[in-house]
Length: 106
Figure (cartoon, rainbow, N blue to C red):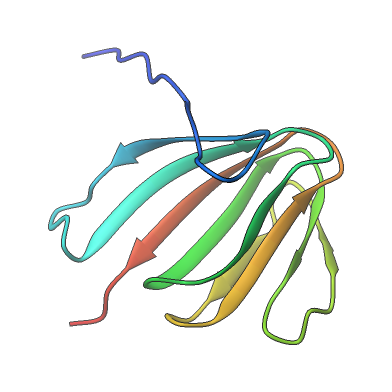
């Protein structure tokens, strides 16, 4: 068994958002896994998904939106997916922790 301490690194251009890579995946060019912690009142700015993306909320509450800019509430246990290139953003209403899995299709 190994225990690692992961330091969260502030995300440039997104005040109140910090991330840490959990695991690059079996092929880092194909799969990447991150954890994101978003402080209450902060958000991930609108951006296109670089790869197919799964956003799983572990703790906290917030809202997400895609190309249509319609906000949808999310909380623990919710899984949000975006396709590569799809514009999206996330707001935290309480401190929100999410695991993000990004995958490039072969």
